Length: 418
Ligand code: LLP
Image (tube, rainbow, N blue to C red):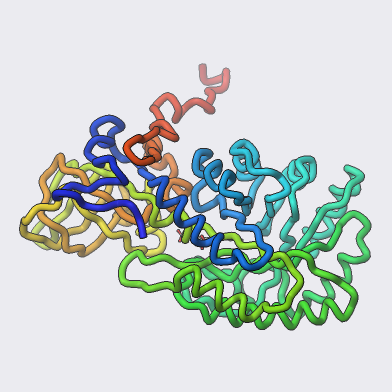
């Protein structure tokens, strides 16, 4: 469910015609629907209302301060993977006690920052990291709350680049060695064992891999309990998929039901780290057709958004629905939608049947709210796009478009070249 709908042949976000945003803000531009964000967060969070839980939004999916603030006001926390994401989450007003910190390569500086702010827990991904967190906490004369992120060796049946819970992946401590790892953690004076975590992958469209993971974690929890190691927080990560095309992922309530069935009777508070399922279909990317072009073998729409704005099609071959802002009864054509970047891999869609459009017209690239802006870059010295948040009849620029001046702001020319 989302609030991007056609009315009288014109695409709206909530009560705002997208044409208005294009005219005032220009393209490329990300547009998010407040009502959709609110709804998705509440549906996900509400699906677990019968148990103690905390929904920690995965900041990597969309890290705009306004969006983080919204989830914070709805009672959400944050799943972070860097000092920069911690900075953003705190700046957005998310309390440190609602922040969990994942990631295989936390630096000493980042660990110190997280300790100084008093986050809820570090999701530890290796034995060396465990020692490092203990050492940093010792230096600060405090104790770090930790969970071990366990790699359950479950196939999430998703794109290999976004599978994380197989034993060949770099993530987590393998489940066979998890007990040993907890026993080691128990001997360290400056860590406090408080959780067990996992995250098996992203864009999962079936519940089975989640259920298999729960079964494995449950066995581990029982073994830990037998050793007198009690786990207060069980962090189940994120990963629930969304429909981009014809996928039909489980509704959050089905996901919740399947998980809660496996975990019945456990005394833990559950933590979730959803990203895509909350923001994915709550955002779109607006772009303008610069040129139409025919070659003997193909038709191209050259648009002003590129792989630097939305890299998912180039990187994963991902499908994003594309539609003109005006729905008219015109013929369709099979085209490639490509950006201005000097790489053949710079495309938003290939072999796509689209209504015939002329240069100057605008298109909406749908389902771009997750891993869209956050994965954007300045490649080809292209300023990054603006971001707009729509609420009912109002809209707000929540990130201004970058300027050429912004591109060079941090650079300097050494004296010898002056
Ligand atoms: N927790 C951890 C530890 C993660 O690594 C991730 C995503 C999440 C939570 C959130 O997963 P979600 O609910 O969004 O599936 N750039 C890729 C997705 C990479 C996901 C990385 N980790 C894409 O555009 O599809």
